[in-house]
Length: 231
Image (cartoon, rainbow, N blue to C red; front, side):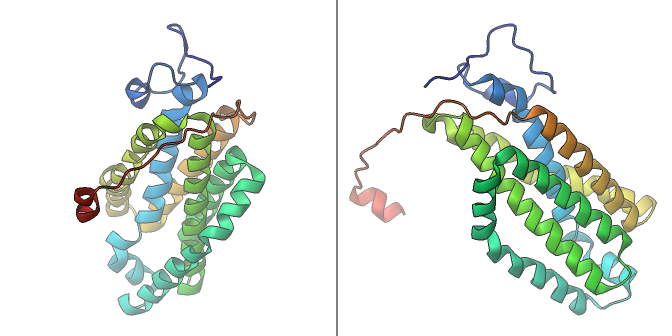
């Protein structure tokens, strides 16, 4: 496949957790950065998912009803239909630039949420966080496709998916504790600072140079009745 293999002395340079589950023949780019991109997505997910568990607190802080606040959430979710357009942008600018922009967008959205004085400002912040999160996820998928052979993409994608669960169990819980100790504005401020820092790290660490093209693997899929019934 034309990939560089990580030797026994290859330096990972980031907390070595997920890379241990990778295939030994995986490229150095992936082995060095699998933990980084997963942590980045975890932080972005935390900012994105912070809203719903604390809906009552946020609506009270903005002086609106829960029903009115729900309209802002609905608007932000509807904007998710722009995903296909974001995918085209990611293809055009490249995955490193798109991942960096996604983190910067989440940081800007979280900062705007922290400074919001009314529901309209907060709705704009939610849209910005949501769209930027989608852009980052699309770019991450592109990065995996660019560096990981077809046969092993499921494993690498699965490793990055732990960020979705940990974003709620860990990240949102920490933001909740911060909210209880201070205010929800401080929690959004911390989320903004964390995503901004991750944007800088991604920009420095993720390679912009494309690897050699993967050999396309063709598989004949034979559908049998038990499989069809199971689906």
